[in-house]
Amino acid sequence: MNHSAKFFYVQVKQLNDADAFYANCLGMPTESIMISAKEKGIMVKADHEINIFLSEQKHQNQTNKIVLTSDDCLEDYCRLKSRGVIFKNRPAYLSEGLSIEFSDPYGNHFIILEQRNYNED
Amino acid sequence: MRINVMRYVKELSNRNKIISESTCEALYEQQNDAYTIKFVFNGTEDCEINKRKFSIYPDTFAVVNAGTNFCSKIDSISPVNTFSVSFGENFIKDFHRTFSSSNENLLDGKEAKGTPPFIESLYPFSGDMRFNVLHLKSQLDKGLKDEILINEYLYHCLLNYYKIYDKEVVQKLDKLSFIKTKTREEVLKRLTLAKEYISSNYNQNITLENIAEQACLSVNHLLRTFKEAYEISPYQFLVQLRLNRAKKLLQTTPYSLNEIVGLVGFECPSSFIRLFKHTFNITPLKYRKSRLN
Image 1 (cartoon, each protein chain N blue to C red):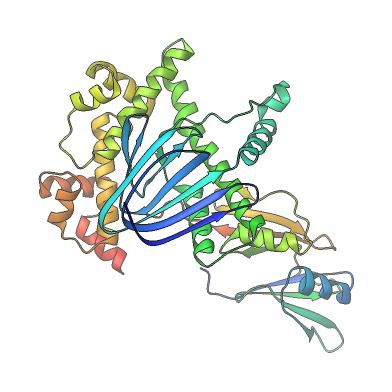
Image 2 (image 1 turned 120 degrees about the horizontal axis):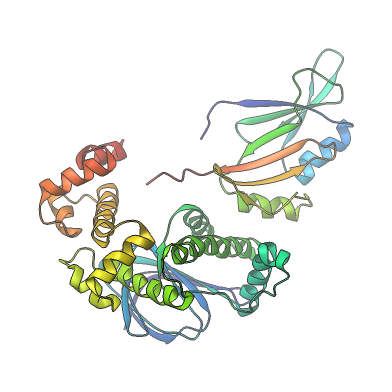
């Protein structure tokens, strides 16, 4: 497990709608913050290691590809599906483990990866 | 007779069924009513299918077809944890149809067969199958009731099995040099018996003649076809199995090295240590120490 904190900076079209999606649909705790003196933002606690900073304005360090880790990808898949998240396909096997993919309403691409060590005894 | 330590049965509305049991002593004799995959998490379950005897260890799983007469026996000092997954007829047919039509058959316009091609045997319990089944078991042990999630695990269990089946059966059939498909299938069935026999009697003093007799093949035929299919000799397969099971015992038990050497069927500790080091690049005791750390 990666114990170092990770941050993703993500642009969204509308903070209020984004808050509803991240909090209600993805079930992630959100918190209003100030990105700068004049700019409001939202901090999403994706898990105990990953925070996502949402803002309406474009910044250089933003990304539209967010990789989240999971202990049990199938459990997350079913939980999020029941909350209305639309996945691009069914959970798929990669050389690193099991993954699922979806997008937020603004086209940001999410990958949930359950890393599996296939060489472990 | 049955002495149960812990047992639960989870039957879903689509007739998929999961039985988890932890027991020191059990004897079952029944006609298997659904396609079933049987796992053992610790210890051994001795089974008999159509007069074929084999043992399920934690590094293998067994597949049993619907309608097969199946006997199993557990007789152990410490509890043996077994986990059995049975699939409802419609669930497995739907899965098979989806799986077949998502592959080349769709392009070829072929109809998927109504029933899946299970060869009743032992298969390696590793990789994604192991991860998914361990997740399922852990969730059920905690009281999971969500049928959608349980069925998702079972869907993936079948998906993983089909992948293993392709590797262990379909690809091995292609490696055999016989021209006729029926001959290849028959030889692979017999090689499967040989592997089952080795896996179930790995700790005994077994000879090539014993293995050949169990597989209904001559010794020469066994040696040639086994190597063709699996790229190693039956003896190399036996040694690998002994080393891997010794590795597991080093990891999970406090048994002494000499005890483990005897338990996995090696006669001499020094040859075991040499082979272990040659295979895993570490001595058995250093390996145990590294796992403790």
